[in-house]
Image (tube, rainbow, N blue to C red; front, side, top):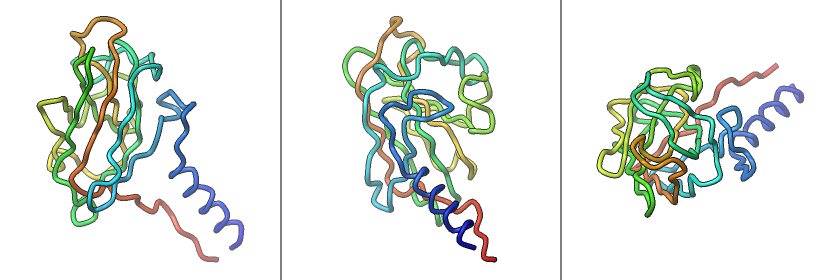
Length: 168
């Protein structure tokens, strides 16, 4: 039993850790789990992060430069209480965001579950429960190397979900 609890504690610690050095889809920049008030917002910069995303959304888009990758877990209501995720980008690029199931990988040109940008929010109603990569980058029409600051804000919670629990 101690081993199962230790493994579970280690997994939870890894889930909540934020690594500044992690810059790939294999090791996302962070896991994002805002509370019922939508706190904290996800903010950072796309500059200096994942540069190997060639195509997403079955050719509908790609990252012209660096992309910030967050792992998120979406739950059905009432656990997932948000209605939308709003995106704000900075000067020098047009922000684009793609939500891709983690099972598809984030550079496998898999279908996107939904997309967003500075004028289009991601809506909870468009997103089935599951684990996803949230890829934040510039628009495919931006100049090569375009990057900048961003904020993603949810108006509610994207909860942490318990994957397994063992009592022995």
